[in-house]
Every structure is written in C-alpha cells, then in structure tokens.
Image (cartoon, rainbow, N blue to C red; front, side, top):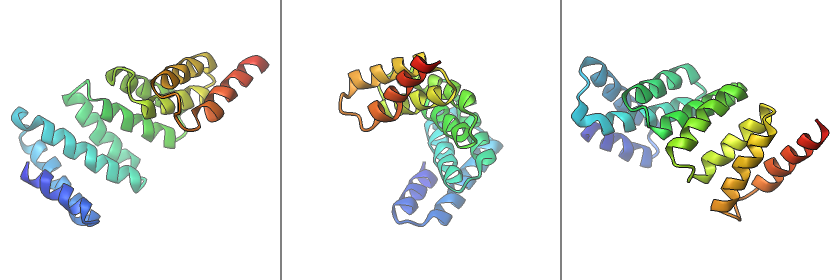
Length: 163
C-alpha cells in the first residue's frame, strides 16, 4: 500500500517516470507472491500502470496488466473498460464493444462515459439498434450528456434508415 500511495503522490506531482517505476515494483512484487489481503492495491496499481502504458501507446503491456487485473477480479469494470479502450485505439471495434459491454454490465449501466464508448463502438461495428438502445439508456441517466445525441444517436438512426 505504501508504494501505491507514493506512486499516486508522484503522479500528482507530475513525476510520471518515478511513478511508473514504483508501479512496476508493485507488479513485480505481485509476480513473486500475490497476497489476497492486498488485492485492491495490486488491482489499482496494475490499472494505473496500464493507464500510463495506454497513454504512451504501449498497448501490449497495458493489455497484459488489464488481463492480470481481470483474472484476479472478474468483476473489475475498470479493467474491462481499459481493454475496450485498447481495442478501440487499435480500431477493433467489435472486440472493443464486447469489452465495453462487460464494463457497462459491471457498472450496472450507471456510468454514462462507459455507455457512450459502448454506443460509439456499436456504431462503428454497424450494430445500430444496440447503439440506439445504449444511447437511450445514457440519455435517461443524464439527459444533457454532451454530444451523444449528435455523435451517435442521430448517425445510428440515419444509418439504420439507409441500410
């Protein structure tokens, strides 16, 4: 827990390199001996390090950390969400939609940003009806959610009419 706190402090201080090194140490400690008592700390550190790797376009390293977090906690919505983001950046929209769908389910369909990403990937994967359904759920949660109506809902409806 102390290494994770130090890493978070270094991130706040904009010292990404030192934070990344501390998070790598935590990941190495988990490989040596995973202690279920510190499961939350390991999960947070893996996902934080995966965030850093995603920001620097190291998707293979980020993916392995997300899978590690997901394997230890199958209901970790954040790991599913980050995997969806990785697939989305690699333009594998069907795979991204599958992972965002899991994240959407694990957050009880209550996080509008995940819903937006899911609807976007449904749109890109040409699953227009599913995209419209998710958009409507997001708009029920937050009627003023920015750009979902123009970016996804209207495009999905137009595409559905023309197909």
